[in-house]
Length: 287
DNA sequence: CGCCAGGATTGAA
DNA sequence: TTCAATCATGGC
Image (tube, rainbow, N blue to C red):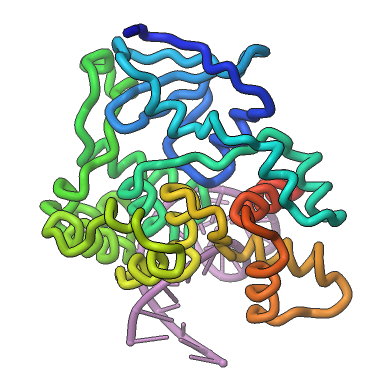
């Protein structure tokens, strides 16, 4: 039945931690509500005792897109049950129980993480917001008279492919414009099929994404984890490197190679989930 | 291996 | 107020 609001009855779901854990860059909190765009849906979410309450700015026939994005059907207890039983992991779980992995659109996720290179989360947000304002389709008409309230879809690969590198650089993305433009063209001109990547195994999918200029192992793993649901992907950035070093090798300094190998073997079949818990735990401790 | 690529933020002068 | 250090990933 079509409605503009719905209750998603989920437990063990920390909406704030999930939307603010560096996976997605377009969500912002207004009072107790999270505003965001999923595809062409503008939605507002808030955590209530019974689960997550969602409101859309339009009538929605099928809310499955929201279940999919938020991964409400994931059995989080089963995932946590596969984590290694050690002090760092149990501390991380205690610190952010209810943290989830999202399931994002591959293009939006890929583009966002190409822009994330050597940027901090606040800056990535700014760049992505500018990109959407300038190249994304405006959704609805609420903000027609009020620029600050305008809502935009994430720009399509085709639209980005039609932009110039200079126009993209004007969104403050610097040298990342080249990588974004080239990726958009690969997709728009049919040389890269992001849907086809779903059919590959983890190693094959990673190799495929890493062919793109500006996409190394870390960014490929972010996309594989946050958009494709490859739970074994374990993005290693400086935060995670520090976390592994401090939490698991406090006495002796471990090489990058050693840490990488540890990451690939220690955390089990849902290593990506474990990574997200460690990442969020370290960010919370740093604040 | 070591350098470089922008721009926001932080803290010193 | 200005200015310099810091941040952090991939290509070469």
